[in-house]
Amino acid sequence: MNAPDPFDPKVRRRNRAMLVVIAALFLGSLVVAGALRFSGWRPAGLKNHGELLDPPGDLRTLSPVLADGKRYAWQPIDRTWRIAVVAPRECGDDCMKLARDVDTVWQLFGKDADRVHVLWLCASTPCVYPERAPRPATLRLVQPSAELRGNLPRANAAGGSPVYVIDPNGFAILRYAPGSDPAGLRADLAKLLKLK
Image 1 (cartoon, rainbow, N blue to C red):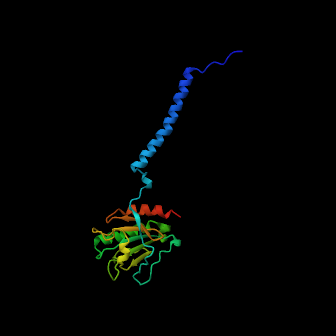
Image 2: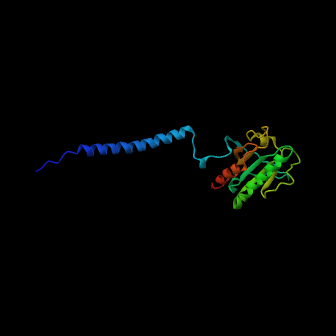
Image 3: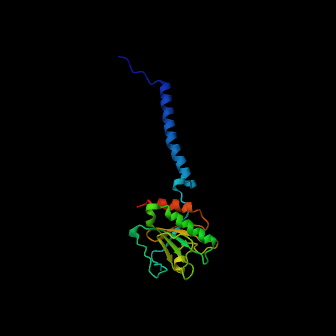
C-alpha cells in the first residue's frame, strides 16, 4: 500500500497567500470604514443642509397665539411638520424674497403640502405678511412672543430672518441661516416627510 503524498509546497504557499489576501480584504475594509466614521465623513445623501440643532428647541409647552387670536396646537398625532420663519420687524425686499421662497418650497411638496404648515412668526403687532407675496394655504401668522423666539436657538441673531424646521411634536430640529438656499430646506424636509 502506498502512503499518501505530502502536500505540494507550491499548493500550500498558494493557499496561505489566498488566506492572507482574504483576511487583508476583510480587515482592510473594517479599517477604512472606521477611519471614515471617525473622520466625520458621511455620504452626501445622509447630510442635511440646515444646521442640526443639538439640543433642539423645545416648543411643546408653548401654545402660540395666531393673528386671529386662536391658539395653535402642535397635535403630534397629525404628523404635521412646520416651516417657521422668524419675520423681521419691517418687511423689505429680503423679506419679500423669503416669503416667495418659502411658498415655492411649500408648493413643491405637491400632495404632501397639507402636511407642512408655514408659521410666520411676526415681530410686531399687528401681524404683517408681505402684501404682494403668495400665501401658502397652510400659512399661519403667529403673534409676537418673546418666549417662542427665546426657545428657538439664535432666532434674534442679526443679519436677517432665520428659518426653522419644527417636527410634529414641537421640537425645532433644523435651522437655516438668513440667506440660505431654499433648495436645502426643501431637500431636508422632503426626507423628513418620508418618515412615518
